[in-house]
Amino acid sequence: MLYWRTGNDSRHVNVGERMFDNLEGAVTGVADRAVRGWVRDKSFPSRIPRLWVKVNGLRAGEIGIDCYQVKAGRRRSEIQAHSFSFPIDPYFDFVDHIEVFFDENMSVPLSFSSDFEICEKSNRPPDPGVRRETPPSWLPGANCEYPSFFLLGAGKSGTTSLHHYLRQHRDVCMSVPKEPYYFETEYVKGPQFYFNRYFPHWKGEPVVGDARQRHLYLPFAPARIFAHNPRAKLVAILRNPVERLVSDWWHWRSRGMEELDLGDAFRADLDRIDAGLGYHSAEEQAAYEATLAEDGKGMYRVYVDSGYYAEQLQRYIDLFGRERLHLAWFEDLVADPWTVTAELLDFLGVDPEPADEFEYPHLNWRKSGMPEKIPDGLVQSIVEHFKPHNRVLERLTGRSLEHWDSPTF
Image 1 (cartoon, rainbow, N blue to C red):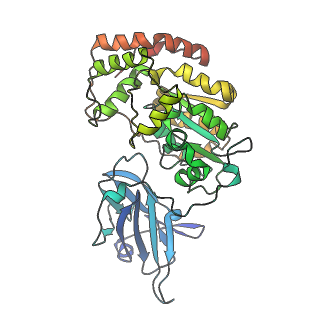
Image 2: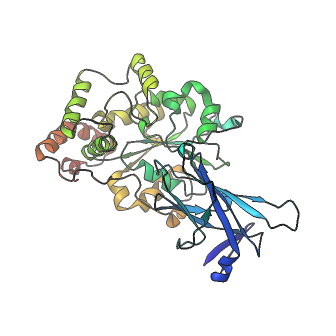
Image 3: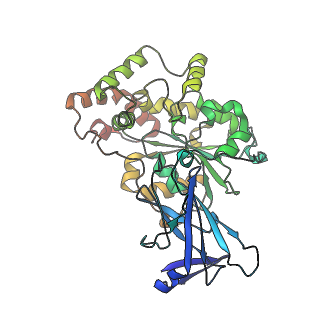
């Protein structure tokens, strides 16, 4: 069955081979992280079909009516074509293969134009192009409304999945790309840059979210976010810091960007902390801004103190107040993503009922090749290091975290 939409009307049309004979289209390219092409129905030119996309062999979503532009022929008698531009989810770090289909079962593909190719431009973030004036509701200060919430982190704790779940709600607009660097390295560029770079797709949704996971860790981020919107809501999702550390280490190790094994990396990071090196001073902050790579890797390993959640949360509580902070937990997200998402939507002030219809894939979780067995002695050393930090977090949150003393891999 194929779904057609004409204006606000939706109807089911039984599709047989003859109906597909009337459809034609092509994928013309992938540029600026968007799949582009055209489609038309020779019998019913006003109808706009839904198409389905695979990226790197994985289902990536549906090309809905909001992805289309209608292009009429030069003469009224000519058949209309409908061009589309489908933004690729940030979950896909790199695009190397695209497929587009007429049917939801993904059995009837569109063809490719003769000049189609995946190239460097395909994976380049979109250029905002003509810059819109910053809406008054986005201007920093006491009257600022947007972003209305910040998904702060922690890293490797499910922020990519939450970003994907939330963006499915009709009243929520999420940052694209997922992780803005504005409050880290682009702050001097001002709010117009921030709005046009990460939220040009905003169409007046009442809830807008920035989802940069490093905001929880960086000590200078809370003051900048507070200066922008002191009424913003805050969301943090926390994971067993031992498991988070291993996942973070493997993220860089599997990409060839961490030369040390897990034990040596853990000890090297402890040495860095003992030496007082971090991002607290103005000089360190400036060095971080000058050296942050496009992939988000800073000048230090931060595997260990990224798990000092209590002190990180306290920095935000001191500025915004505890009532503006919502906590979620990675283990709950794994067990019941619907409940975690619905509770978060309720906190954000939007109807949680649409969460019943969301898709809940687990995004950006364990990568193949990650070591299944870690030496027990090393695990216990990391557990013992985090125990006092976890006890402080228990007092702050009122949640027992004793099970974190027995991590699973």
